[in-house]
Length: 378
Image 1 (cartoon, rainbow, N blue to C red):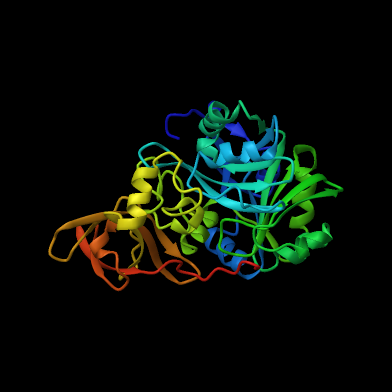
Image 2: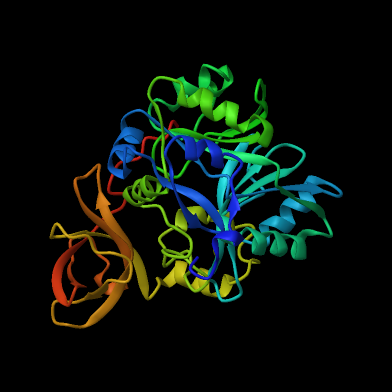
């Protein structure tokens, strides 16, 4: 973001609302985004875990893929772009996906939903232009690729999310984790998924720009709902062990190294009925069968000082082993937490490593992820 001037940054449709709430606006992925509100990151984080937090994630990319012929042809073409089973996804359901490149690295991670006569895709903000171009290049013969630019995207997260949203959209209470539905509401047609990026139960809500401010104000007026900024969004996803694109995963990182093999269903693996056939299959299938050279791990620094992104990791004998890709203080666990990559031989939980902080080597223990249990409504 350092190469962008303020005049180059885009404003969210809810920019004025964030300003009125005291949001501290910072550059992020080409937009002015609220990093925190007056309550502060710690309070916002803990409030989301205890009640409900409202996040503006309208910088994310929303895309509709409409088949030019039958859905099955579109599904097969979309599935060919990633090592994920698209064909078995039922109508009204959503799944986590990964665009991969020929080297087996991750171009982006995303969510995609089967909405009956089309697919709805949500991609990362910093990657959305490239993702739309990627889908257009590979799918335009079988689908119309519609980049949706007139809808806001809000995330309502936490144990109080269902009660807060169901007061205005009663049908959401029936939804389970990764369900998607469309509702006609006073705020316009609302596209809802029961999912999020915090490890908590909650919803992601696509709403027309014209209804976004009214929806946000209505939810924020509900008892227990607080506005939450990027700072707490990052600490929440870190405690949940969730990857941040461009940090924990990138175009050089394979899904196997990243520990997200749960996203690669049996049908796409060696011996499956639709094994391979996706970019980077040779590397990804080899690593699935034989193991990668390095692995993403959870890390618990044994000091009060967080180990931030870029912290180098060593064996106690001084051998370099890897580095931290995300790190900070975990408010819910009252301790520093981090994730990073280490050589596979040192990725076993309980292994003691050393992280170099300000020229000093500090102990850090490999630990299972997540740091805080998830509470999805299954």
